Length: 173
Image (tube, rainbow, N blue to C red):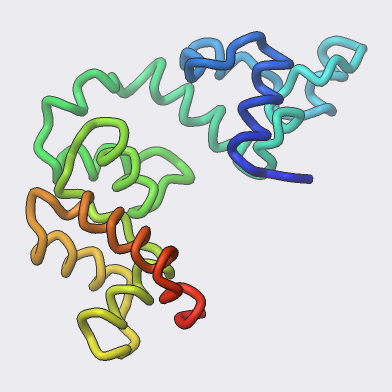
């Protein structure tokens, strides 16, 4: 099963006729998780479920997130919060860890001080700033935010792009 974002978007469009926007939380919480749930409630299989869109293991997390966003958390309030408050709120969503929370805050809400950190950014930062020493992802995130401040998110993007285009990424594997 191919789980590329592009394939998921195409399957979503095919199944739900909506290619250009993310589904409303109220709609998403009503969509079947998988073939079994769809068949048990419809007695027919139309592939109108989350897993049929290629989201795989993310399906239950997406359903729970949609319940939270429609019943408990008002996403429109996130942009009014401080970065730290917004980060803690986003972490309350099941399946969302620090990297995804920072991605949501950077790309979705414009919190430029977010520094999404994963194993690749860890390798890049370690190579560029810590003489290749093994450092924890949490430390990389703190370093990026402290070192680059309000532009940490942009710097992270440029670091990743540089590592891919320069051949550094291949050396760091």
